[in-house]
Image 1: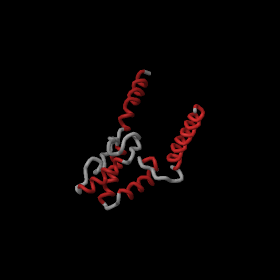
Image 2 (image 1 turned 90 degrees about the vertical axis):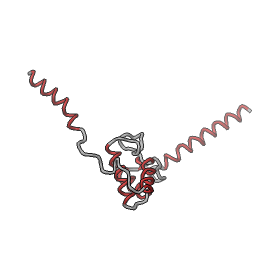
Image 3 (image 1 turned 90 degrees about the horizontal axis):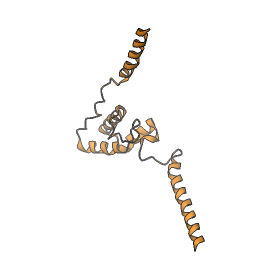
Image 4 (image 1 turned 180 degrees about the horizontal axis):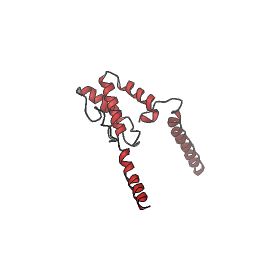
Length: 135
């Protein structure tokens, strides 16, 4: 019985170690491009892309393995001659609109732009109505 408890305890403690990522980072995850203008374009783009794991950091700032893979993809595609807009569109197609800090207005994102405007208009109407009552 004691052996079974010790074995299960050992198993529970070692399983998380097996779950750690054993793959090395992508080649361009932490290495810059040789061409300074291409690296600048890649860096500017990476600042506007959200890390899907961290969700509050850009892929330029995140140390998550997924962010490293995304940095690698951005740098490889920029080095291949793709424009930053093409790379952004490819990543948005692959990961969804959420990956971009600058979402495009589309059938799924228009409420992000319309609802704040509607709230401001309603608040302004309420404010004007209350000011007219006092006067």
